[in-house]
Length: 483
Image (cartoon, rainbow, N blue to C red; front, side, top):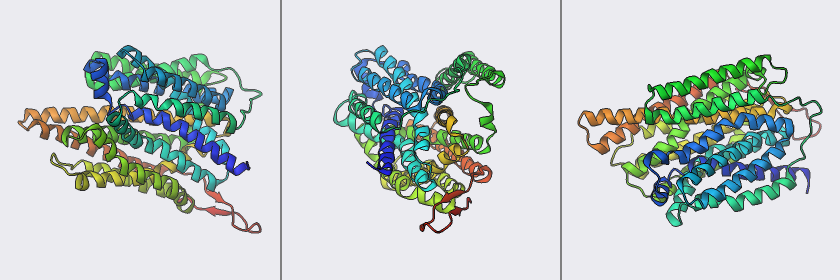
């Protein structure tokens, strides 16, 4: 097998592994009513089917990325696959609510390991700018389109089979990816002077991130002004401050703070937080709109996301890399995020008696187009200035910003939606009108998130010019200007 084919096969294996992880963030949403009825979850406990995964996934991303840099990205990737696959078996066969929640927590651990190093491995495989842009388009579809595919697959599997299969489907995929990854991924390069792992720093940031996710996802349930929520979020801030102080004085930090002095890294994290907040809310709230307002069943909800998945795949795989090589990073990022904002704005006017073709499909298509175009340049901007020996850490930072942004954005917009619904109900609105009014306000604020991300990314990112080899050997290389 020649070198080019080997690189692309390795990319597909990495993307398939990461797709499993991304799917499990959203695949359970449509199946939650079936899980509750089968295992006897209380309404409060049911949220932990999602929260347990988010807690461990968000908490261990930075640590997993650093472990990849120190001990080998391939080794961490394979270990994460094993943990995730075994946990998927446990989830699919879980006879009690407690075992399902524990299985989801272990899934999150394995998912953090896989996601934190996959992007770093891809950056190492592709050094040519044109190939890297194309590879990032494929990976971008996995990360952004995985949400839509997750809702689609969750609805289809739950509707045609049962909820157990949303977990069991991971098992043959996980085994196949593990076997192929051992063969096609490059051997880890051992650092001669890797230094010790900053265990106290790892403990501080992991606990801080887990507390932050826990406080955010529980804020809507117990109240944002409650002693519990404020105490948990306050503790997370204190631990994060202690982590930053330690990283500034320790000889071998887990996260070198100079990483955040890189302009593109910091700006792309800010853009990622805002965009993920809007995207997570879009997937979650649009599914609720289809189910609770329009009365769709699980299978119908899943199929409704098919247009988004198809358009996103087409743009990510066939269009995004060409736009990046032609126009640079900033223009596709700004246009893509602007289209995503327009998608959310359209959903903010969806009525109670809406039709799929008029009130749902246009937003679905716009989101697929916008996300398919924008995700590639966001990833390239975040990773472009990072040294190869810190690619795993940077990959973990990218994933952490998306995870934390998604969790925070979803919690805030669900809180806004609930507040608006309660307010409308108190004013005498019909229950369905009040519920839809809450959704509309949340979608409008989500549109604002995406719009601010577009403006900030377009105005402040300063990516390096991309070089593209000329067609003829005698020609000089061509510089593609960044707009």
